[in-house]
Length: 638
Ligand code: WTA
Image (cartoon, rainbow, N blue to C red):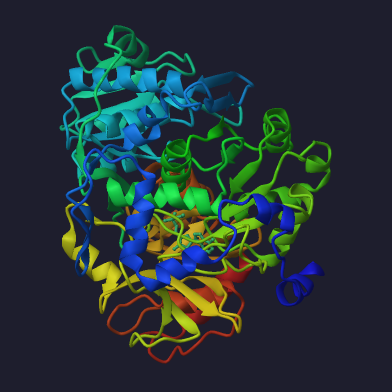
């Protein structure tokens, strides 16, 4: 698109005076305060929460282990619900939910409070206590938020598993977390189809002896099997439960949740977040970056199964008493204007979505949003991967009507809350750049030796409140993967421009990002070699115009017979079964041998060269350089 030069180099978008005047953050004071004394700054921010007991010490930092707000007591659910009771927020709508088939539900803060109290009691009755792990495998329905908050209320640690994950992935996560209870639904809806969630849960549960009880939300009404003594209907439990459940007084450093994410090995890591610091981060960034106002109708399209759904659906917006929209379903159901219809219908003021979605909308064409009234929008957000300037320009013009600032927010499951992002009333925007680290965030770009550079590895040089506290049951992995010389290593590459703007360049490790879903190439390889006819596999990511990246796998089958037609589809399905359909490779190329060094290391870099049509790099270290020609021929012929 002709826009890219124009937008990347020439244009800086300054906040309009109208926006700035009304904004929560109007100037750079916060940055200055944070720069003067980071700990004092965070202590001041922590006052945004209601604490049962104040902390004795702001930060206890024994690298790489941080404790924030040491000695402080609070409850995350109390901060999202109880403290709004008796205020004007009590009768305000907390959640507006719309299902794919058009069903609607609207829940006030008071109603949400009542349901969470009852469900908390129900969980207690099922034997759940402080510190117990509870798995949640639900579609995007209000009960998903109720379930998370109820766990937080009684001090149970939730681990939400995205409903797009397979039974196998659900099992692995429940086993690793030692989940005692699972909350699921009869099913979910997606593009008019039914997702058999309970069936998948049953399959997973066969191998999870720690789960004693299963709570089932009735949602799709599809027939399901219940295991007597183990499975309980959500509505029955709620109906019988007392209406009040006092919130547990939690230590600031007590675990709030574990969320699994992909890394560079075949095994996902359980990222641990604690209560106080995490909630300070989620709450304050919602105020700064999304400019949260009592009058907003906020819509984050992320699923609760990802970190964005934790920080910017469940915790951040509710702690700020916002009204938000939840939508269960696809953007093109029944037509390609569903998102725009929702914005028009509910008067959405803030939209937070992913570049992959924006590029899909671009491909569908601007006639879809043009047919709807989007004038309620005042702020747009982007998350999950770098947003290319063309997509930024389209989003700005066709969705934001040229008037809405775009906050391109960089962060990770591990960081807990947004780290690098514009503050919409303050930061001049450059399309494609996440701009600057937020106040209190010490982001540095360094080289291999840890020396500051204008291009290199993105690191965070000082601890921040919402940082991960560890990898569940694997401290060695936490220390090794993330820390170098006392700095947090993000795994992303970045550049600084002459104005000090941060430009994110993508991952520098074997983590890939397909449609904003984080995956490890090793995970895909493990799923492939799990198939009985596969000898070896190498998965790589190549750029994709809509999905950002897509997966190409090179596979050597065990027997020649496996080269037959149909085997590619069978293997793709196998990956879907092991991980989830979103992890299916786009292409599988069958070859006789992978490019390997004499010591047997697979040279994925050379496969990337072939896939991206480049002249292959140095092949002299290969045990058999002739395999390159064969692979190339095979790649081009398929
Ligand atoms: C990528 C999602 C560029 C990045 C919140 C990071 C981004 C990974 C952006 C984390 C952005 C996320 N610009 N890249 N605005 N946001 N990323 O854990 O590579 O699912 O390391 O968290 O997504 O993915 P995760």
